[in-house]
Image (tube, rainbow, N blue to C red):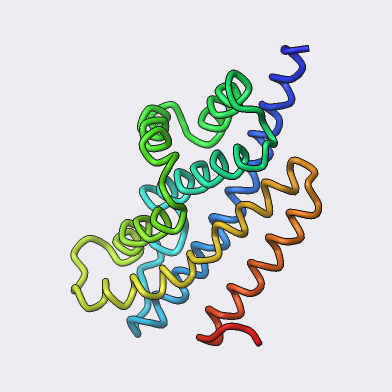
Length: 192
């Protein structure tokens, strides 16, 4: 029984990796467009594709969200099963060079508030998009645009997780929450 359960946990981790990749790419495209609009000039083409530190930041964030949410929902039982799943998620989401760093990050932040982590990810993303030698005022405008865009990533990530684990009700609730956040970000005020 344990062998087949481990195979299932590994398959769940692979599917989440694929979902996280799609979500990360979509959000990064929005971040680039919003930052470009906020600062008023075009970004270099090599900064328009999710890669490098920006990619690692988003994947680490998504993995922390996943482990917290999966534990809260009981999709994977705590203990040995969660250890197996966590190891599989890290193995599938990070290349060998970055796995140790990702593991340390997850252990350090697994009890943090998700919104705090989202805010912390904003600066490295903006620095990646704009480059290290950017004027502080551009970084400030970029941070605001990035934070607003990233505010929906927890709901989107949770929606993908709930779908992967067959929890249609929660996936639907997360999709509605994501829609409300998107409406707020676009209009600057909550939907009425």
